[in-house]
View 1 (cartoon, helix red, strand yellow):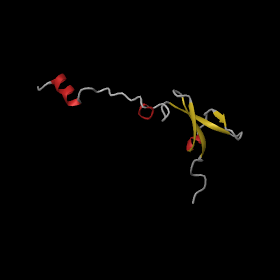
View 2 (cartoon, rainbow, N blue to C red):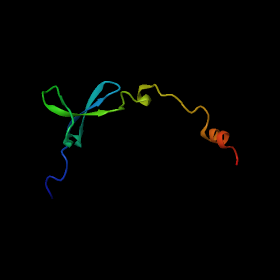
View 3 (cartoon, rainbow, N blue to C red):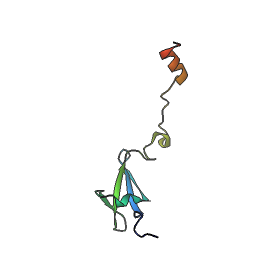
View 4 (spheres, helix red, strand yellow):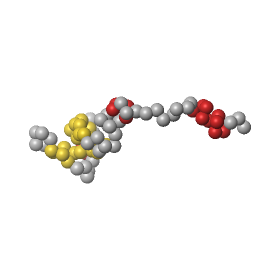
Amino acid sequence: MKTNTHPTYDLVAFRDKSAGTTFWSRSTLSTRAGLPTLTAEDGTEHPVFDVDVSSASHPFWTGTARVLDSEGRVEKFRRRYGSR
């Protein structure tokens, strides 16, 4: 087998900007250049990847989901375009 063909699979911190939470997971994102680093509790530095939405801020998981479509899609289409 060829050596050095796969990216490294290492510990990465994912930071949710909207909720202000950070969670750790393993990912191949550690090979990207230019990611900021975060020091773990054991003193090692790991890259940080900022995410917009995670389970800490997603409306489905936080219970703040709203129903935006009060009328059905078919009725809305028929009202807008009718029968031509």
